[in-house]
Amino acid sequence: MLLRNPLLLALLPLAAAVLFYAQRKNTRSAIKFTSGSLLKGLPDSFKLKLAKNLFFLRLASCVLIIIALTRPQSPLSDSRIQSEGIDIVLAIDCSTSMLAEDFKLGGRRQNRLEAVRDVVKDFVRGRANDRLGLAAFAGGAYTACPLTLDHGWLLENLERVKTGLIEDGTAIGLGLVCALNSLKSTKAKSKVVILLTDGRNNAGGISPLTAAEAARALKIKVYTIGAGTKGSAPYPVKDFFGNTAYQLMEVDIDEDVLKEIAAKTEGKYFRATDTESLRQIYKEIDRLEKTVIEDKGYREYKELFPLFLIPGLILLFTEIILSNTFLRKIP
Image (cartoon, rainbow, N blue to C red; front, side, top):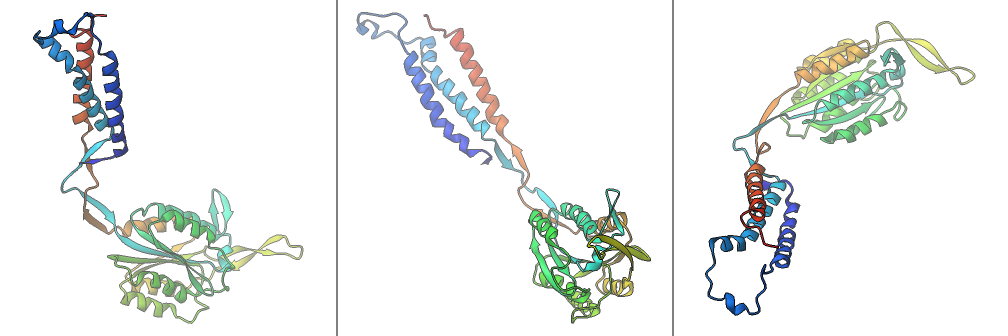
């Protein structure tokens, strides 16, 4: 048995002291005698014996009610908890091409990186039992957040992923290797990388397919996402006066390489052409990656407070009724 609010047990000595003080204060003879010797030798009646023990009835009721307030619980034997024990690293392209505004949020045009942030937040909130990590890449790559169960902290680091923090370019191979480094030494039964990019590999010293071979050797599944509309997309630029203008930029995603990375690692390739399709992709990956682990534990409990509360209330009401009827004192 365990107590949810054990600190309430401190009320027990306080309650006992208060009741004892009240008992002493109220214990007076109803009829005064000039000498107590007159009462000696008189046998105690049943009523008198009961009246003398009324204090203990009141004390017992208080003890039981206080114990009930501590919420005693008993673990249910053989209770089993199901959870998804998966380590997932989100590898996100943060090159300047991610500023192209071919996605929408709330009906307003938004750049790809902001749309990805919004969708990833929903994905993260749905993976409460998984360790998640974050890798960002452009011309280089870095671990934006190591694997963690503190998803609030991960989302804070997601907000810090911006364009311009590292040299520009699209190092898909380097970004994938960065994600693999976070996963290679973990003991999770399932390891996954979700890699999102809007371009083709043009930087870094590692080929994307070489990185895919490494992922396959480590038994890490890679889902790849190509983000960007088909054709051309509006890209913000500064004009001569420093104002923001837009020019059309050709969308150039190396879908063949992304498909091959996914195929080599038993993953899957997706193409996101707008915010809604991107959201559906992450939902699909969320559905696919539900490896259920059954843990035997004691996280389900049976509440025991009624076993103390009900007898305590019965004793309390019995004491009140007796002290005001059968054992009522003569003023």
